[in-house]
Image 1 (cartoon, rainbow, N blue to C red):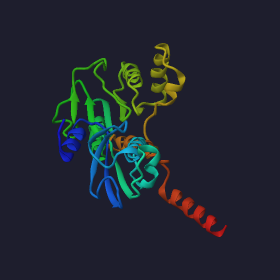
Image 2: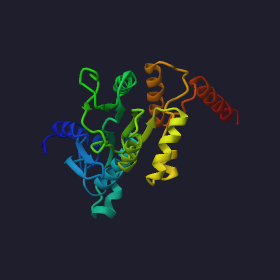
Image 3: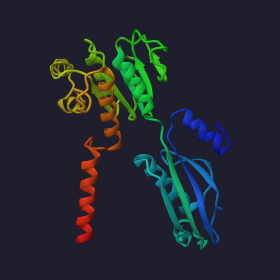
Image 4: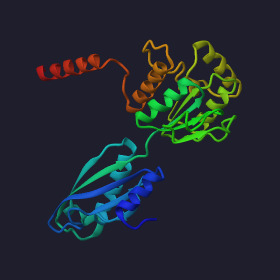
Length: 274
């Protein structure tokens, strides 16, 4: 493991491992760490590098780091060190503020299929900040220059890898779609989208039910995939699919912003008037 702050942070990022950095931004009195002190913590709050304070300071920062990695939000932690009496037996009487910043791996987009639609999904996914893997038996690096990985020898999707930050798009229109869905569900993917007509969806889901896949799992699959943009061309369909995934990832409604902003303004006006 690297022994300096920046090298370790880069190493964790390269390995797609989540971590938090903690920086002392203010230190007064007999604080246990000076302003500028830094630390790196794992997703469980374990200290991997550095020092921002001992006792209850370390415990509080570790707890906040674990929470930050769950919600993806930075936070400023004010610490009154006179409260350390219960933790260390020695109140130091200082004050600190520690800035905690989560560093999450890029979300991944796994696209299964071949053709212009899959090429467009790969390109738009990469432009939207995803690391893209394409599973295409006829794929080449030239077809998918934006992909991090192109898999060509996995007909039964046994090598399909997914994490809770992986979004899977099944765009094969193939008889083995049910295998891809089962694999993605088993691996706990963040979301599964299937590009298909309603009729094809029902046919694939029928096979999934025969395989023992529960209704609640099937209900979580976005099929037909995408938002209603009225698109007909592969690029337009790809845009609608990626938009739906981005909205789901960010907690967006997928509604027109003019409506959302109008409702927000009306709500603020009502509160102000009240």
